[in-house]
Image (cartoon, rainbow, N blue to C red; front, side):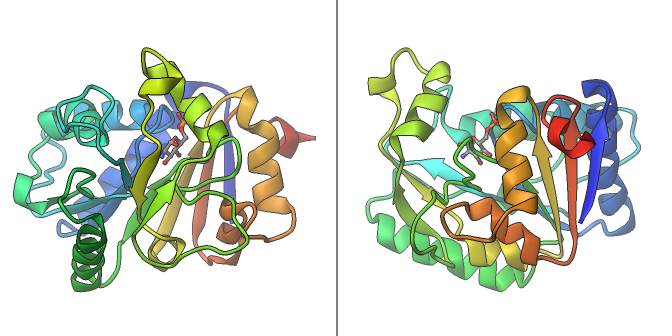
Length: 243
Ligand code: GLP
């Protein structure tokens, strides 16, 4: 595992964006797994800057997002569809037909999970999967549990996850109770995993996940079993690694 701590957010953003744009420059048909949350936003901004300079094109790239809320209209500002459009897709040249995000408004959520799994199977392997981490160690929306699922599935969000994400909604009652998420099997199948973590409030969980016991009660701890993980931490999130 390659754990890198950055003094400034600018340096972290640049490093993250470089990893992704270099991948696409060498492999224009790269398959990229994308994440939402606040941690990747600065990286997406730097990717857009590189794109605007004409240094990279995403015309042949395919993307798979990790997760989506159930029942939130696609045009809701906090839907992950809307988040991805706003922060990335509206500003680069990836064709809409090559963008994959689970549909949390599908008539049959079970069928939607099966469809997403088929798409992932057809893609064979994600080249690079971007990940964040929840305060309770979740990845995507794979919440701590006595067992984790491999494929895309419906998940009931933990109270602490709804509370953490309430900052983006008018009130906690507006935070959806369920989500669709890629499973840990699909995440761990990626060739490279890029974990991005920022802020003091994540210092303990990221340290425990990457150095503590491997347990389904801390889904991010399973990253320890992957042979190619790059971790980008800001100074606050990386505090315990520096000690
Ligand atoms: C949400 C997403 C996760 C993300 C997490 C952390 O719960 N479903 O994929 O990793 O938020 O978000 P942040 O980057 O804002 O800390």
